[in-house]
Image (tube, rainbow, N blue to C red):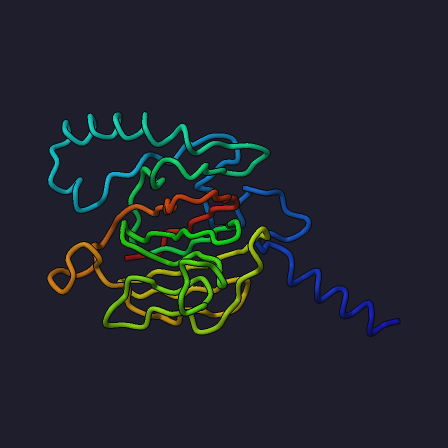
Length: 231
């Protein structure tokens, strides 16, 4: 009996403060983190303007362009029962604020053959897809740095839950190096993320938006938390 009580106590201690724990409320950030998604509306989010495109705009041009893309994109991202739903018919959703070094939690769910990803500093991407899906010829899991060419791109292990079930990313980004855990398993270990927009020419931007990638599929997100780290 004493051994059982000790094991139970240790389990409860391990769950305290962990995102997704049974006694936590969805979209309520753990200590030290900020909720990027409040479970009610699209505060903190806007429609996609790619980071390399917006860099060429004046403030006035960007403001006008943002109004245009928001009108087209935001209606396809809706909130129901504390969950961010995407209908597959718009484009990426990106944070209003840019981020440098950070830790990020994201809960996500896809359909069979679903395909998505998380852009870091406006660059693709931490991959999300069906490990057995039609767009996944190598049949590897989610979490890899899909667009890497010089550095590793595939996840270290398959850690996905089946389509239709929730998954949790923990992502840490410092400099250009990214570490990813999927459902508690290490899938990317301190690997450089390459600059997608200026391949081989420029380093990864020091700051940029976090994005939820559109790939024409129904998607679900919740519990999106960020903690900024020192540059």
